[in-house]
Each structure stands twice: as C-alpha cells, then as structure tokens.
Image (tube, rainbow, N blue to C red; front, side, top):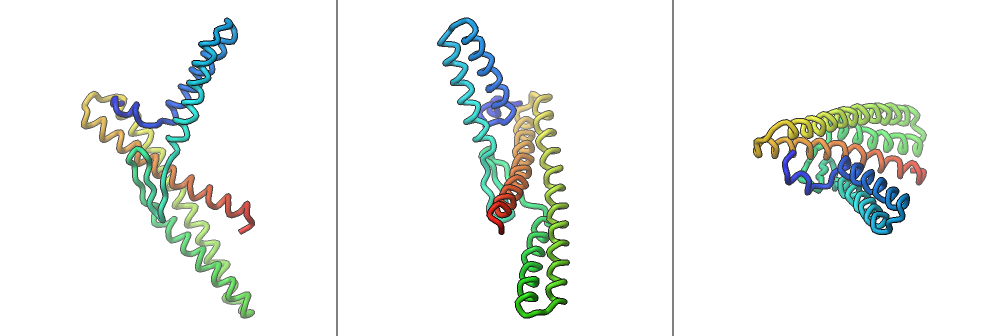
Length: 181
C-alpha cells in the first residue's frame, strides 16, 4: 500500500507491532538485556495505542466517519428497522396503558419486524465493509500507481467506517441491555 498508509492507525499493523514487541521483550529477558526488555515493552504499549486509534470512529445518526477519512451512511434497512422498533415500542406502551390488546399486539409485531430489518441491514453493511477493507488492502498492495493506491486506501477506509458503524450500534444495544433498557 502507499507510504502514507503506514501513517494511518492500523489494526493489523498494531498486531504485528505487538508481536515484535513481545518477541523483543522475551528475548531481552532470556539474555538479560534490560534495553531489549524496555524497547519491547515500549513497542507493545505503542501497539495498544495504535490499535485503539484504528478503532476510533464517530457516529452521528446514520453517518459514521473514521479517523482515516472513511465515511459510511447506514443501510436504509437499518434506519427503517430502528424506526419500526421505536414506533412498535410506543404502540406496545400505549396499548398496555389504555388496555388495547390489538394496539399492543400490533406494536409487538412492528417491533419484531424492525429488529429483523435492522439486523438484515447490519449484516449487509458488515459484508460491504469487509469486502471494501479486503479489496482496498489487496488492491493497494498490487499497484504502484499513487492515484490507484489512494483510491484503494479510500475504499479500505470506507469499509472500515461501515464495520465501525455496525460495531457502534451493537455496542450501544449491548450497553442498553446491560442497563436493563
């Protein structure tokens, strides 16, 4: 990939850096070299930081952006599914409040359909994200043209944004379930 890609935080790069640091630190302990132990531990700490940076993304509504310039708008099924869940929950609440079983049942159906629709949209975005990340990475590796390398880097970052978007929604849902919401 292009030289400027190395400046971007990379999950894979952080894994490699962590492995190198672990090996160097272990070697230092084996031969009694405090310098190698210290250098290895420094590389491992830098790898943790790089990994955290590579996962940095901002999500506002249906739009997610990564620190590397990738952007993604959620699949329409995700957006509509979330809306259907909200409306369905409201119908269930109101139906229960006023004793209208038909409204309550309709709300439950709409909520469940919303969950299915949102899940299908998340799966679609996840497949798109993985495809773009892999395609961008591999494409950038097999060209020397700077313009093509930049296009592949953007493709990779857009894929990363799609994946981070799904991760953010799943994390938000898990935290809400933890709180009992």
